[in-house]
Image (cartoon, rainbow, N blue to C red):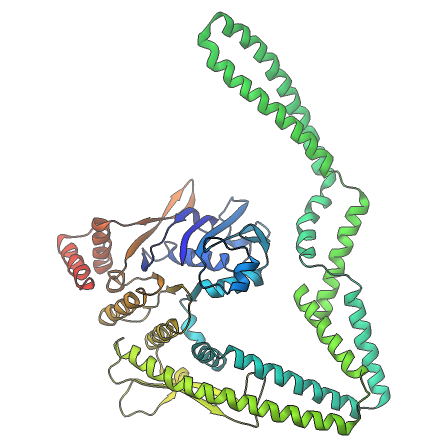
Length: 549
C-alpha cells in the first residue's frame, strides 16, 4: 500500500505531496488537467523508462519519492533492501539529459531492481492496457499468474534450454572440423573483445554524468575563478562594512538588527568564497582524465553498435558467446551419446510441458468461471467467456506446449470467438476489470491503479464499474482516474485535479475534496458545468447517497 507520494517538477506537477487513503482513491478533473501525470510519476518511481521530457520547463531536475507498506515483499527482497518497520522508501530523479538515478531505503538501485520491487507493490492498468489483452502471450502470462504457475513455467524453460543446448551440440558434432574451428575462433574473438573492456556495472552512467564536466573543465575553472574573485572582494567589503556598523550599533542600538543581518551575510559570503575556491581546484582536470573518460565512452559505444542496444545487452551477448564457445569446444562426446542425452531431455521436456498444461487447464477452468461471475456484475446480460488452453506436443517452446486464447461473446446465439475479434473497447475494458478483480484475489499486490477503466461505458454500466471497484477496495488500495460521476461517487477519498498557469507555465494542483466540494464536483461531472445548479447538486447528493447503500 502506498502511504505517501511526493512529486517535484514532474511534467505539469511543480510540487505535490499526497497521502492516499487505504481504500478507493478517485481522481477527477477536466480533460488535460494532469490526472494521468500522477500515475505516470508513480510508474516512473517504480522503474518505467523515461526521457528528459518529463521535466517541468525551467527545472534542473525532476524527483519522485514514495513510501510503501512492504508486507508483500518476499523475505529475500526485504532483507536485501534493509526494510524496517514494514516500510520501504523509494526515490528516483531525472536530469535535463534524461539521466536518472534511484535509491531504495537510501541504497542505490537500478531500473531493473525498481521494477522487481514495484511488481510486488503496485499493479498498473493504464488507459490502453486492455488492448494488450488481445495478445496471446499476455493472455498466457495472466493465466499463469492467476494459477501461480511461475515455478512450473520456469522449470519448463530450464528443461527446454537444456534440450536446445544439446541440439546445438549435436549440430556442432555434425559440422565439419573447419566450420567448427571457424565458428569457435569467431566466438572467442567476440567474447575477448567484450571481456577485455572490463565493464563494471553503472560505469557508463557515471562516465556520462562526468563527461560534460571534464569536457568543459577549463571553462568551469575560469568561470569559478572569476566568480571567486568577485565574491572574495564582496566578502572583504562586507567585513569592512560590518566594522562600521558595529561602531554605529555602539552608539545607536536601533542599528543592531542591521548589524546582525550584515554579520550573517558576511559569514555566508566568506563561506561561499571558500567553496568557490575549492570548486575551482576540483574542476580543473588533467588531460589524461579527459582522454580516459572519452576513450571508455567510445569503447562502450563501439560495443553497443556491435553487440546490443545497451550495456546489459552487451553483457547478455557475452554470456551467449561463452555458452556457444563452450558447446563447440566440448567435443568429447560422440554423436550417439549426444543423441541419447537429447532423447532423454526431450522426453523430460514433454513430461514437464504436459504437467504444466494440466495445471493450466485447471486454472483456465477456474479463471473462466471467476471472470464470468465478475462480468455478470458489469452490465453483461448473456455473456459467455472461456479461457482455452490447447496443447500441441509438436509445438513445445520455452513457455510450454500451450496455445492460450480467451474466447468471448456478448451476443446470444453467436459462437465463442477470440476476444480480439469480438469485443468492443468498452467490453474490453470491462473484461479487463473482471480479470483484474479475479487476479487480485490470487495475488498479494497491495495497490492497484486504474487509469480511465470506465472508458467507453455509459452511466448505467459506470455505476456497476464503481460498485466493482468499491468491492475491490475493501481488500486493496485502489487508485482510479475517472470522468464518470457514477464511478467517482464510490470513492472513499476524492481528489480534484486542476490546471493553472503561474508565471506563464502550466501547473497541476491536487486537493482532497470535503463533503461539500465533492458534491459540487459530482454535480459538475453530471452537468458538465463549472458552476453547479441546485438541481445538479440535488442529483449529486442522490448519487452519493446511493453509492453508500
